[in-house]
Image 1 (cartoon, rainbow, N blue to C red):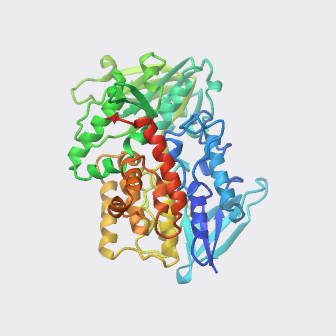
Image 2: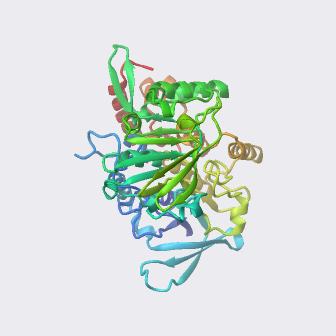
Image 3: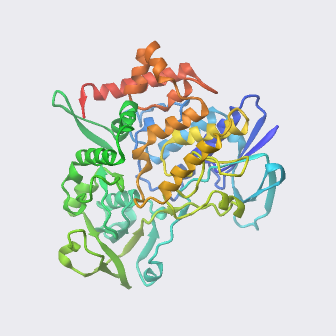
Length: 537
């Protein structure tokens, strides 16, 4: 028997555990190390990193694993977007269904992963069950290890921390924000230009006395609703989740024929149309060239309307200059491309706030990995796009019997699952890694992402379908679309022209489940066609 350690009990850890149990021969035993008393990662109901009103930005059809479809109840049957408790419930049911919980070692905080002889790995951890007790270091050697610790695990350092030490109001990081009720009649400054800052600003509007959002840079972003509006051929307008628009396989493969410039124009024009040029909101007009990749795509339903109504005041192009008590002084940054400064050429602006919420994101924390591992994966903790250099995001260049799942910026369980299956197939010897030339080509692509001058692009909106198909091809579970087109036109229509559904990766290959796969594909296709019949985009 071989023992595989899995670090992390969130979505990536759960699907990795299940993938280990799928290895033919049942000769592998997983042990999942989870530092919290519950599974689920950031979706644990009591997790402080997720606020109470948060919902997924993609539909429930994209928040599932390939062989465990989401089952609606009274709460979700008429909803596309899930709350934190609803998504946690799905993960918990997944763990129950596949009998994973008995393999999870809760309250186990991994402090070090070290290389042992014969390409094995020593795991050192402490038991955190009794917080008042002195931690006792434990250790065990494993044959293989999968790192699934997640990307949102360490708040990024704010570059103006010292300045804000003089602030006499309440200062928190977004991870500690839970609900707007505690900000009733407060003057709140939200710092950041991210998904979390946008949603927190919106969440505060009906409770706070005032909400200001400080956008320190001048990078433009597209803001769209979770439900986007499209026009049918008959003139009727319908709403559908954003993943229903962008994740159609035929469209994604057609886009492969475009040059980078043509593709960037296509994306920007698409977002311009869907956002109505950010709903003609002056402060958020998209001004940069459409030939450049979209810097950021934010999905938030009421953000723009709250800006237009004055409930959210945008402070764009300013940086923090001084702090005295509750008074924050902002200094105008460099002019825009036309030489104009924001806010009528005001150079300094002083405002008083009761609360400041920092939405400056997270860094990937891999401090528990030995230096040899960190050097091999060329780890840069504050690189949001490419913190690690790994083949297909899974395997390091030189180290054996170690794999990584979910250390790239993606919200999709599809990607996590394919990575986990890939890792387990290689560990079991069922699959071999690519030849050196192909291996190096993929690493080169990752270096290009790391050193690209356009940072913080949303991976999830750009290449989700193509990236998933590439991973599926690597592990032998990508359907032969050309053959299916000849032999089963109905199935081909679902796969090629319907909503992208990860159940397609259970049609063929190792651990395939063709009957369940076809049933799920048909269900997705029926939902998609019900909304988009004669859709014109």
